[in-house]
Image (cartoon, rainbow, N blue to C red):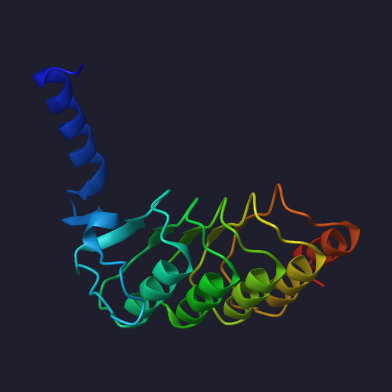
Length: 188
């Protein structure tokens, strides 16, 4: 059992990790957003710079609600951690639509969700036009060759892309997808 000193230490560490002293901006989590209805847009707090929803299990409906909120907010979310949330292809498509027009999200973590080629192809659509994403984590998913080829095509045909880190490990990408990715990374 944790005593008051332990709880205080945890609180101080949490506060240090979730507040950016220089800007006053902070990380936001599941408690900052209403996930109950994907048709109702809950405003994202304007002081939120990092959305950390790791293992919040928001599913496709939550991803759709978040996508709507991202499209209708003044908050400058720079980091979006959606790891292990049971997001499938439909949720990924909604997020892709938001990311296609978003001008702030630089870091996207979708590890361990339920999306496959269809979701990857939707995300590739966003990568065709997005110029701010720098780090994209699509690991431990069900992405195969079709999804990998779409991502490769998107990155290879977006000269203004700023993606510098692309993680695709632990997927179902075969030789064809790997060759397409290698060709895109090689510049042609």
